Amino acid sequence: MVDDASVNTPTAAQDERRLILDQAFDADLLYALRATLEAHATHAGMPDGRAMDLVITVHELATNAVVHGAGTGRVRIWRTGDTLRCEISDAGRATPPAAAPGTVPENDVVVDAARWPVEHGHGLWIARFLPDRFTIGSGPEGTVAVADFALPPDGHDEPFALTRHDLDSHTVLELSGALGDEAAQQLAVVVREIVSAGPEPRLLLDLGRVTFWDVMGIAALITAQQQVDGAKAGAMVLTGLTADFRRRLDALSPAPLTVAGTQEEAVRRLQPPA
Image 1 (spheres, rainbow, N blue to C red):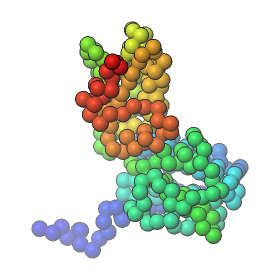
Image 2: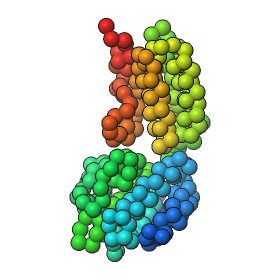
Image 3: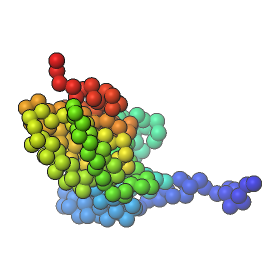
Image 4: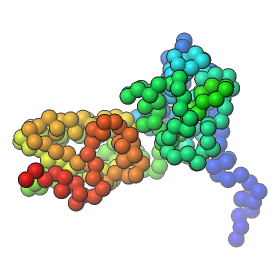
């Protein structure tokens, strides 16, 4: 039976598409822009850590627009279904991205915006790394960057949990739930214990049950890798990553983490050299 209410009505995604922020900025307004972005992202349902990822990304792009572009710009954010689409333009009215949504490979640069440099840890580098999708294009009217952030799925707020298994050849840490601030603190304590227990820590991190992550969660993984690498003959391998999470880590350059597709592969990589 056809539900009469669904006839000749917009789809759910179309119905939810709405502009939630339209704000001009210049050098004097960048600080205030951060507070506005955080408020809108949180109100839309972003967890604190992921909301800060959005704030950092948009603020960096706005700063590039001020420093390397026209000196002024505009931020627009749309709620489109389960996504927040952030558009940052550096002059005049915003122009469409260089390609229609859905036709551009994820985190690709459509047209190189020569005025916005790509430097490790800043601007376009951050914009390529943190969002779920990023495009940028330049034209006669200026440069327009678009960063999409998916709103969290059901279960994203599942508390973080860490289970430790000490085996003969290595230690397995199974991580589950939200990989954020709390995870960072717990992981740091456990890894520190493992590293201090012997000169050759061999650690397998299974992320198969991680439901959500933010930049603090990724920083925790990198810190753990650095702790293990600092040991005499330490080794750490990640496994169980979703394709999206692995793409985030692959965007880091130089790659600070070792990732295996399966637990079997991870165990092989943990074996000491013959």
